Image 1 (cartoon, rainbow over the protein chains, first blue to last red):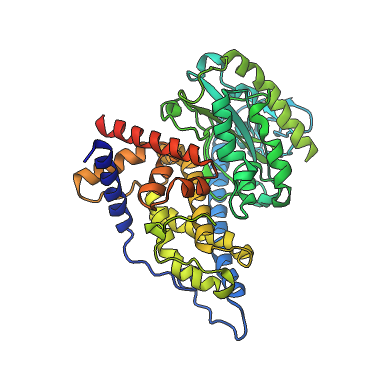
Image 2 (spheres, rainbow over the protein chains, first blue to last red):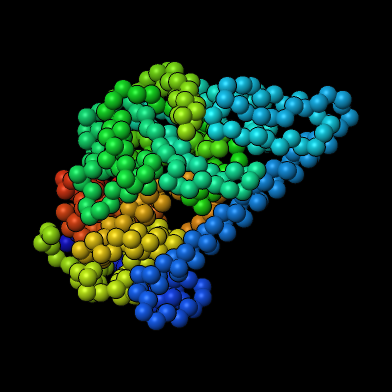
Length: 328
Length: 168
């Protein structure tokens, strides 16, 4: 038996062993889908009957989402209250952090009032001079950009930033996913990498069955009916667009996807040699989360992208975020 | 439909046209195998269940139009797993949101699974689809939405990376 065959057998055995950990599973409706047993109404079809069960799953997710938001808001309020106490002996008034349509600088000055409640408008970016923990300061800012000197070693082959509507901590409401959107910007990369990425993640012709919503789900999220246009737009990777790299330094944010996200730097991921995009940063711009991904794959992109060029594109990318938000 | 052998993971699963069965039938029949496939990929029972049900929610609105619900579900689920792996790798590492899968108890198997889990999501997915789901290159390409050549290349590189991980 060759070494390769031996490895394949070993892998097959291992995967089978892991699958066996699941044990015997019975998928029966409705107890395995939902939490309650609902008798099938007379004359009801199975499709109709399954939907409320799925709805129960969604409600469970929503509850988790709301719980996460409550925790985040509670922690933020506590931190703000502590900050207010710390400066209660001063007479200066801390202005309420309000983001408006024009890019402004939010300054943190001592206050004697109750903790400021940030007013969030989805068309602004504030610059934060110093790291604090208030919600207003958790927004994606130019100050959060990674200097070129801190970028991980290339080569880089593209990146994207993603906009997801998130739960507004002030109102605990969130926009539906259909209203969220994506915008991708990438650098030109090696031809092989372009073909690989497009064929795998962006090629509409390679989508089997009726899975155009996958494009929407993974990349564009504009609308299921706009998938073709979205795919056309996503051919960014062969174009000469900007690519952004942003550094994280903020706290988890709950997104409409019901999974908590946190901002990261990507240096630890540089060695994993996967050609899937990695999360580089997730920050807030108004009501949306901006998620910046970047992939680093040495074998896939022999031509490194100049880090200085990347850094130069950061401000432009943020401008585009603002421009997009201003239009939505 | 491409002619290929029925994969092990879906052996016994439905290949019937949606018109002669209900979504409940599909759910009961395909659910366990899909759950195992998801678990092998993501290593978390809770996440696997979540993704499996997410795949079914994708099927429901288009059930009448899907010719082969089993293949549809497998494709959707594989991509959901791939997306989850890609997006959550750092969250899992930094936040510890998901516990690592429990060891099997056999050193060689655990070593192999640990090496597999260290691979990138796409490498891991292609190996799982090939050596657990027993899909051929064309079927893997169909699931992952890439060309057959790309699937073959990824499989080759996945095995090479796995061997490298095991030799560390």
